[in-house]
Length: 234
Image 1: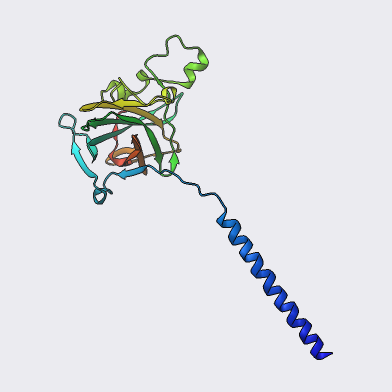
Image 2: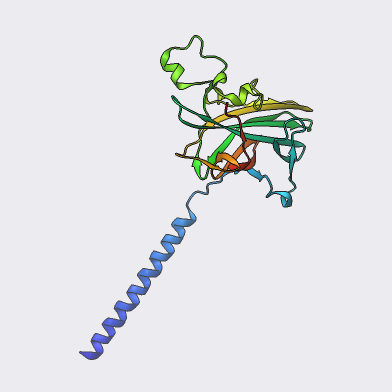
């Protein structure tokens, strides 16, 4: 009985090993047959972090206002960015974060420009729909859009009010012709509560803002500490 039992045990062990091997081969073959998915990731250049990747960061001052301008240069494209904020009261409590971006195309080809992403301390900020005037809009439409006159960063001249990113026109890319430049503005609502921190140096948004614009398939990312933003509040 003992010999027979041992033989049966060995057979069971051998059978188990064989089944495990077959299962392993089957899984391996099934994985080999899985389709391969390819993703095309756009490149990104981050201001102050990209010199090792053939992009050049610089920080200059507006000779007229003294405001800080961040610049990124890569492959014949220069993108510059300025950032500000506006405290707002009743009706739209909180803060507007404002950006103006100039794209200079030194290449011999057209380049397409579209809005990138904006985040505030990891919170996604949505671009606000901007209109030159609310005249002719009904009450519901008026509540959903932001008029240029409501943003003092426009009226003060900090933001250019000719061209701007807006969800109302997001389906259309802007095009910058060779040897030409284009300045585009945008406004977002700070997604946080109590985002302003005051000290003896003044009141500024807390945290860090990441703002990007996409030129062709390349993201140009600018990092703005809240204390470096220009106060456009009236």
